[in-house]
Image 1 (cartoon, protein in one colour):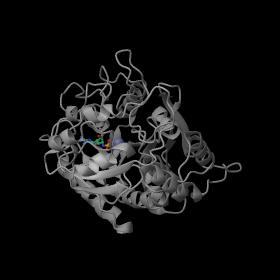
Image 2 (tube, protein in one colour):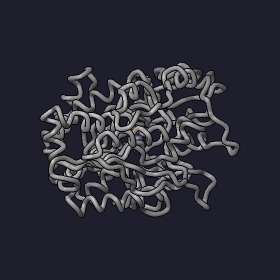
Image 3 (tube, protein in one colour):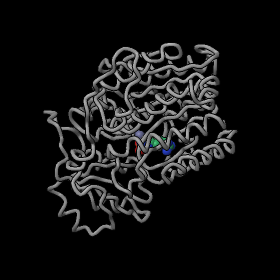
Image 4 (cartoon, protein in one colour):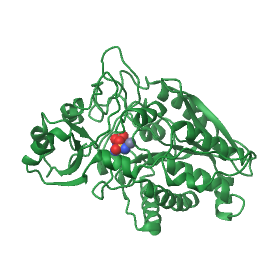
Amino acid sequence: MKLSVILLAPLVLATAVPKQERKITYDGYKAFRISTEHDAAAVKEKLAGLSVVPFNFNTEEHLDIAIAPEDITAFEALNLTAEVMHEDLGADIAKHETFSAYEGVTAQAIPSLTWFNSYHAYADHMQFFNDLQGAFTQNSEIFTVGNSGQGRSIFGIHLWGSGGKGSKPAVYFHGTVHAREWITAKVVEYITYNLLVQYSNNTAVKTVLDSYDFYIIPFVNPDGFVYTQTTNRLWRKNRQTRTSSSCVGTDMNRNWPYKWEVTGGASTDPCDETYKGQAAGDTTEIKALVAFTQTLKNSKGIKLFIDWHSYGQYILTPWGYDCSLKPANHARQASLASGLATRIAQSYGTRFTTGQACAALYATTGDSTDYLTGAALAEFAWTIELRPTGSSGGGFVLPAAQILASAIEQWEGMKYLLAAM
Ligand code: 0X9
Ligand code: ZN
């Protein structure tokens, strides 16, 4: 990491949610991408005292933040080099994040692609997966790895091909690790949809599904996701409380029990957005996921793991915890990642940057891809940060009109990767 996460603490504290838990609308908030000119500490010092919501931790080049209405004039007086990401964050959430109720399907029918025109509630996502599975009972099954801290199901769908259930190495996807990254569930749903629907009429898809067992978990962090819809659209962590602090939540991507103890890539402050927890793997969700991941490792092994995130348009390969370390198969990973970026760009020209996660973005400790690589021995374990880049606007609030295109470009990319790897 180019800059210590600890430095973010004063900004993060400003995001602590008030006790009464009224919904934060973000009306009148303005979001900016501030150019840090390689001195993020100086920028943060200037921002101290303003009510700021941090979007990113990649503060070497830019800092993306939302500013509360009462502080916009003071912010503008600072004369920082900045471009506007949201003129009015609350208005953009209301305008671009269209929601629909899911109507379901009649018995064994395939859900309509209109699902990908808008965002949905957690219960509807569950229903969507149940309906999709119900149309393909021969080669799919709903599973659960356990429950979240608040008792919601961390469900997934298992897909297999002609070799039969559980006969091939795993392709393993996680979505909604960070609560506010809504596009990720939609993208993994689209990939699931196409694997199932095209299995019978596309030979390339048939070959892929005959070669791997897929385990797709759209909501690693269901409690956080529900909270983004009821209370705070920009919530990131899970909703676990700790006796040691009144701040809520642990970062699900800093709690995995591999190199968790290494310093510098996560925060030990429960109020911070990258809080790592009190002990390695001490969150309810990660405990369940570790157990499940180990069963995959011990059965046919894991060929590919992808942790789907947003935003920034990156394809990140290991390691996260050390910027100078590369896995033994790094060259192969880098070549596949760059092939994937090329293939993604062919749909709509969307450019993804590839690189070693620590060097290309920042250091993390206890992230999923390090665990998958180091402790579950996945051949490839990547983080994909979806649209937008950030400078093109939108941040976490990706307009619903971009859901389908985001999903299509990733599906095209996956067809390449799954055949080439
Ligand atoms: O910080 C994260 O957990 C991921 N970015 S996000 O904005 N979605 O929160 C990136 C994790 C990738 N790993 C490393 N950069 N080491
Ligand atoms: Zn994320």
